[in-house]
Length: 464
Image 1 (cartoon, rainbow, N blue to C red):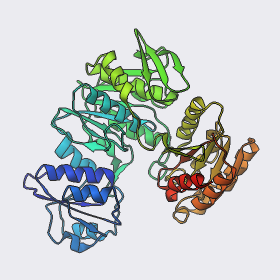
Image 2: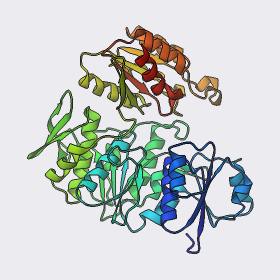
Image 3: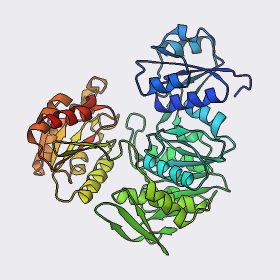
Image 4: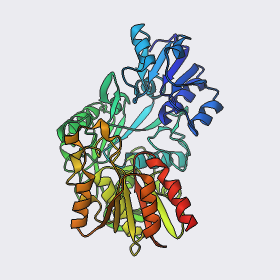
């Protein structure tokens, strides 16, 4: 990018990643402004503390100071008045991934953690492993790790650990975000069909991951889950070193005698037993990926275990939000059938005797569609009671493409599951308060706010 850039404006600055990048640019000495719709806390306070002026709402007037560079957020589309003005006047603009590459990643030792599931937890655990051992990494994570209390940090160290999202970059760049991250090492946890709004089928998802793999340099490393049948064919890369991890005997890092204990996950590699504070097979695989990556970069088993001992997880990943009226409320970001199945399986390990509730909001661009209509019932197999809400933003989906929640409920009832379809958070709260008992576990599945259902549930249960 041009060396004479002095002023930078962020369209959609209130997003977690955008706000972190804006603050980092200001620390580099740039004059930074931003705009967004309805900027609330904690981002409003964060940006104010960084002394970054934020315009509430989008307007051509927000670009009256003629910034040298405009960063366009992933959620911004054509029709946005600031975008239209930038295009009309041929102003310099870029996406957030382009900005990260140009100002923060270039010249660093970039480790990109990708995959359909588990990449946020894996990236956070890997960053904490490096942090615990004095490597002071930069990181950029699509969630809030409890050990760091922020999703992004930029340091002067040579290390940059970044979550590699396969979602598209911007309205003007439909390549996956991870294409921009200049990896030295790529870690891929797994590969399944997702993001039905931008990928036509599983082959399209495989294709974009193959593009990421092509970027690994000959002196780099590709680390892949050797147990994943969708991923394995992509791991036969001849241009760079490849190592496989997994629970099978054919993997370069072998785990055996895997034990999923009621309150923790443990696994063994040759000559060492690792113990984590996480639960479930998916988290064993996430931790195993971290072991493989950290050992490649010179950390010992004991150094890695020291980080595992103190890792506190990630917000909204099987996060206990509170206990009220004897009911434990768990928040989980899961929306893909595989993620829901694995979370409920892990909860069943942790709470083998309790009644487990699953409250599901079909909100992601994939689960709002009928792509997983037949797979979703099986995903709730470990739950005792299920509540399905109305499909979010229903009007945006063609009727023939929509998920049918009533059919989902019928299919679950046919499996013998206690199931209800309730359209809104308030009716769901009333239902749970009436029927949940002390000792029950209630897990909320949503990749959004779900009408503040978590706080409403805790308050109502506490009043019983």
